[in-house]
Structures are given as C-alpha cells and as structure tokens.
Length: 278
Image 1 (cartoon, rainbow, N blue to C red):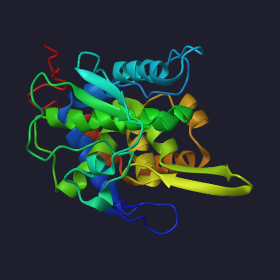
Image 2 (cartoon, rainbow, N blue to C red):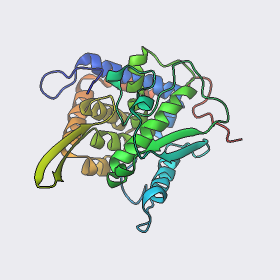
Image 3 (cartoon, rainbow, N blue to C red):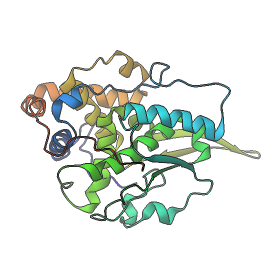
C-alpha cells in the first residue's frame, strides 16, 4: 500500500514528513475555523459517551445510527449527506480520477479536482455490510468520506498535487476528531478459516501510514492539551506507541511549530458552509 512519505529508520518519521504534518495541520486549521475551532474539537472515542447504540438494531438501521453519531461529532448534521450500502464494491468508482496506487476500497470516491459538487445534490457516503462487524473501520471510513467532501469547502485550494490530496483527507479526518479510529483501523491482522484451512489476513486502509496518523493525532493532543486518558487506553498497542513517541518528539524538537499552530487564525470564508438540502 502506497504511503506518500517514507518512514525513517527505527520508529521515527523523517523530518520532512513531520514538517508536512505540521504545515498541513496549520492549513486545515486555518481553513476550518482557526485554532479556536480545533481546540474545541473533541477526540471521539468508541464509547457510549460518543455513540448511542441500540443492541436490537442490525444491518442498515445500525449503520444509519452509527453514521448519525459520526455526523454529529463532525459538526455536519446540516449537510445533505446520505448513507448507502454497497453490496459489491465497485473498484472503478473508488479509483475515480486518482492514480491507482493511491486508492483503496476504504478511500471514498473522488471527484475530479476543480469540478464542484452540484448545489443541492446529496453527498453519498457508501459502506460495506461486512464492515458492520468492525465498527472501528466503519467509523474511520465514514470520517474519511466526510473529510473528502469537507475539503471542497476550504477557503483556499488544497496545497500540493492531486497525489497529495488523499493525505489531506486522512489528516482532516484526524483533525475532525476521529484520529483514534483511523489509527486503530490503519492496520488490521486477523485470523480466518475456510473449510479445513486456517490462516491469517492483514489489511491496510487509507493513505497515511499508522505512524503518520499517530503523529498527527499527537500534534492535535499536544496543541489542544486534550485529555488523553481515554485515548491512550483505547488505542491499540502499535498506534499507542506511535502517539507516545511522537508526543515526546514534539516536546523535544517541535515546540516552535506547535506554538505557531496555536496562533493560526481562521481564513475568510467560514469553516463549515452547509450544503443545502433544498
């Protein structure tokens, strides 16, 4: 699976990758409400405090209930967004105009850069029925989809090339509060059985690596002084280690960039312009 940045030796990211994460976080913060908005964004956890679930629901009803919570925490309840089940995933739709090596089944469909989404048209978020068995991955996918659409509302063009845009989608989902879900879902390793055969299966989702997602989450926690007790408890072992290492690195070497992030003001144009449902 392609990652825009190469990982440095041991467990650290390259300084180039870290600088990009700070610069991209500053860009996102400026375009979506300034640091005041980022500081007021809760880090969403997979607990009853953030998701009200009904144990009697399943299938489409369960997906809709989860999606309603995701929309609420993303502050996008006023957007005209519809959730659709996708029984057989159409890889061509997922690839869209993007280069094949930066696409996966867990990256939402992309519209061509510069082609606006028609006013009043519903924004479609798809999901696969099998992801209901893995709610963490399901929420991560939903958050990426919303981040993808939210990028079209930015006051300034997304920096860099089209190849870098999916990196901003992932980062945006983290800064919308869903970093734990993206980090935990970024690498899955599970057992499977087929008849008399027993095996193991791994999968990757998204564009940024687990270490990059962990560092982005660490930037958000350090910049906003967020309560990290529930976060650290619920992160899987590998992303927890990535976040802990990143926080130590930020405190040691990147305090200037962190202070600059805290001073970011909102760009003109407003943070979350609602898409009319009329």
